[in-house]
Length: 406
Image (cartoon, rainbow, N blue to C red):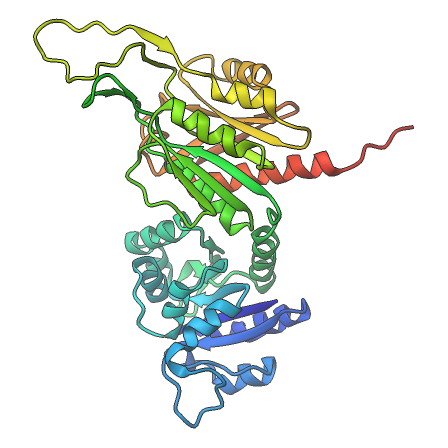
């Protein structure tokens, strides 16, 4: 596997040489990309000698360089060839470029061009690390799936004491290896995900709906893609841009969502139902706009219970994960739903908590299986998606492990 090691300008840049060596000890091929500021601390020749690879130091190589790639698109070639991008050390300026999408040099352009996992190990002055701008950039990167190896605490080169020291080499290397292992742990799986609300028409201009934004389902689709899965996303109406899934199906009503899910369920090895499907729909929608002349009374009828239907239809080996949005008797209601609908796991959300769940960028809850309950503290929905998929891989491994009998 090939790793791009980005080295940026800071006193900790010399430690990148040890990181490169440790990566090679793990049979990883390392190509170093240095910013102009990094070259003030360590010479490119150091990394060239260590790795045996060309060290990229500028956006456009000279015509007489040893590059075997056209310099004008070299960042694209490197982006497509690497299995991960590790930036260590990463300065505050680098975090800002990444968070704001500024392609100002080879490294920041490579970050935008690659779809490989990204691990970043910041190092800087304690006040720079604590500054709200830096912390905001870190949160932005985390929300986009970047692994942040937080700096350690201690005596800094500037003479101050506090957070900001580059994390230990072993910690950085292990974080990268963990991300590489995770990046393909769903390879071979076909994940079917439902997301968003459903709209049940009252007349041609009005509908019954709910507050679901679809963000949790879209985060799950993105996370599953990054871990090597083939993903089919069935989505109700949202304002979101779909990730680059294998197949995207847009629906509006609960009946349309049911039809789409039933059509694809048989091909899925894992199905995750995050959609907030309407429980009721108008019994007789009006073909014409209803005039506001008197009180309106709606006759509602229950919609199909799609999750229960899938639970009754699933074949041996298929995993089925549901969501439970509750406001009272949380664990009791969720566990009853888990058992009644024949699920492998259920994600419990307390939707009465302010600032979380519907419409928010953040979430929290519990992942409940037949044997355990895992509490998930408040985090971004993309991070929570990763926790849910960790449970999926655990359930898959347990199902594939043969039982030993006496």
